[in-house]
Amino acid sequence: MRAEAQNTVAEIEKSLELLRQRLNWDTAQHRLEEFNARVEDPTLWDDPEAAQKLMRDRQVLIDAMDVYKGIKQDLADNIELIELGEMEEDDEVVKEAEKSLKELAKSAAQKELEALLNGEADSNDTFLEINSGAGGTESCDWASILARMYVRWAEKKGYKVELQSMSPGEEAGIKSVVYKISGHNAYGWLKTESGVHRLVRISPYDSAARRHTSFSSVWVYPVVDDNIEIEINPSEIRIDTYRSSGAGGQHVNTTDSAVRITHIPTGIVVTSSEKSQHQNRDIAMKALKSRLYQMELDRRNADINAAHEAKGDAGWGNQIRSYVLQPYQMVKDLRTGHETSDTQGTLDGDLDGFMAATLALDVSGKSRAEANFSE
Image 1 (tube, rainbow, N blue to C red):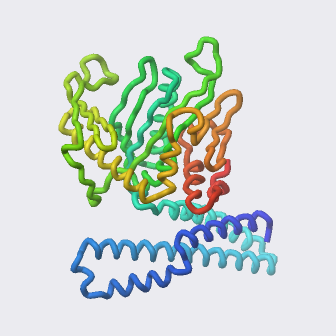
Image 2: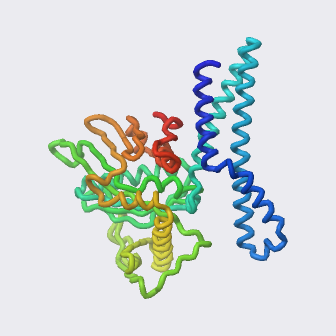
């Protein structure tokens, strides 16, 4: 077998190993038998909600097992074809099998990534919050660049992006912004982006053309599903209305329609500045429930909790990723080591490689997904 084909086989085998780990293959058949036994229980549908959950979990397991077995069988079939073609010196058969292997490698890599998105809320829509750090206009401009980057990424995924609230900078950029991003696995992907992002560049706002370092923080939390009960005591929240501001002229949003909700026990503050005060209350309350739900997820998941605790203030020592535009071009994630010299592509929303590398940390202490998204 030629070296290129051997490398492709090795990549497929790595993907298979990760799928096997995530599936816990050694016990998968036993778990399926248990599911099947429960499905046969005549009392199952006495609790329709529990029954539906069981049926969904069973189907997820069946689908995952079928994916693993299908990739494994396709790999074996193509290896056999290559060996037969080489024995019979049929170059066309070998080339066709090698082409199929490359397609299988891409499919396996995609299934590998999908297998990483199996957290409790990974499939949910998400809120994305960006706040500028210390540094005035430069940091506000960096926050607006990040906002554009994530909107571009979401649009490439086919996700729906809705602006929830925005506070403009005094001279340029934004102090803070919150988006709701809707689409399958939106939270699962974007949760990897929570943390401080550092920019190094020649500032366009510095007449001396000096190099500046700016920081902005990103916080991601899932939109709460209607089936998830989050109880909020009315006595523990404070609701304020205020005059919202934004682009469009002095007559835009001149009524006190914007809403700010403060959750007193936790200090969480959420805002919404649409035209309707009633709509703003509803949006802000949903955002508050999502924040409280995220706190509960943090308690359950030590990895996510550690990531949020490590985020800290938007400044030195807390960054997860550096974007260096001068004196050289590089974007590097400090958690995984994943990096690229295509800074413009990254700022235009090419983030899957960074996200995949971070998701892979859930499986091992190093980035398994690097090879599938090498720059």
